[in-house]
Image (cartoon, rainbow, N blue to C red; front, side, top):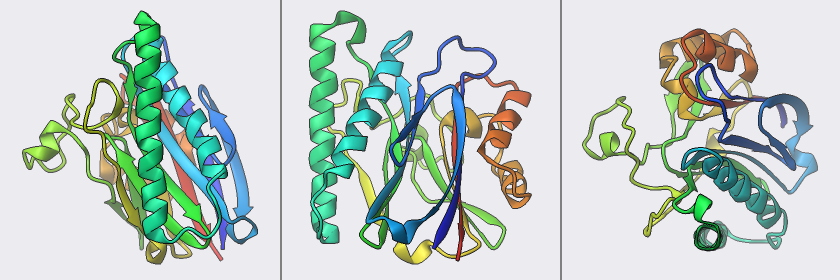
Length: 249
């Protein structure tokens, strides 16, 4: 199975600092873009992840960078042969570890106190795909031309059943003083089909561009940078980061 990957991360039109970060394989991206074609069968593991930092000034930037930098090495060092249940346990162990790291940094550096980040990822591990989510960044699948959100926002709006509504208040994150952080982790191997596209994004995209327009842009074979541009054209009030993964034989 072959994957075409594009990724883009922009500061947007209003903010002066980009607190988002993207991880594609072994490459970290902020304030830039990349594209890559891979044959997923050539590797026993590969990861696509996005972190949207919180905390203001440089703190959110530190939280997202620390989280994805740590995830990059942790994921590459996972032992071979983990069953799905053991993979889930390993990733939850990582979540506990990175929470402790961010909390410790906040205790030693007052400027980082309270910093946190969301995390959303699509991971390939030994012929299985998993998605994971902590916070309100999102993973979508476009199948037969129709866009579907796979992740559930960990937000006050979602908790109150306000479908499709955004809330500035999130109920789950990494760091940020969240004492009960958790990962939604779901195997999705049977959802990876030739012709499909998957999109990982921060709320800087979905707060500015509705799902119908995103669906139209992806159907037109435009890349992640085009989606970021659409968000900027709509006002770009927040940082914007997007990964688009197109699946082919």
